[in-house]
Amino acid sequence: MAKPQALAGALLLVLVVSLAATEGAHGICGLSNDEFKLCQPAAAVNNPTDGPSSECCAALGKANLSCICRYKGVAGVWLRMYHIDAARAMALPGKCGLAMPSNCS
Image (cartoon, rainbow, N blue to C red; front, side):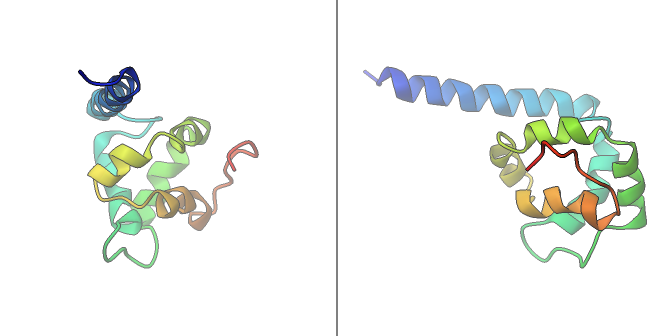
């Protein structure tokens, strides 16, 4: 029989991935799925572009950056699933000249 902690961890992982998939269908933090994809090349794990495209920056300019901050701690699992480096992703707003909220450290 599995340990309760292992079952709870597995359940949490399934919940996070399911939430990300559900929100991804409708958008995340004000970014549509297509807008999210505009920023993937600059945040890719392998062979990222030198910087975000102007289209990516325009999309991030409409995004809810406070909401994005909330994903910072739990996003690692699903960001890796989509081959996105979390540190690069969190650096994109700054590269676009956008200020992240002060409570997003």
